[in-house]
Image (cartoon, rainbow, N blue to C red; front, side):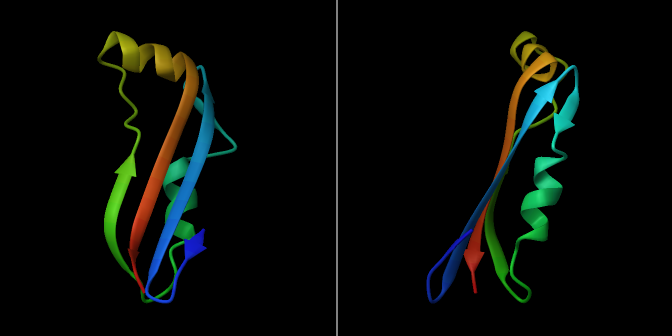
Length: 72
């Protein structure tokens, strides 16, 4: 997590193999790091897309990431 006097930025990543995220769900990990009382202004997360060829391949073996930023 990176912070300034009035803002924060967090990211979490997970390795995906055969649909399982290691070490765990990246969105849950990033949300757990949000400071109490902070306001989230931006949240970007990799979808668990099984409907497209690229999404399917990324869920077989790939990476998922979540990025959260906001104000303190």
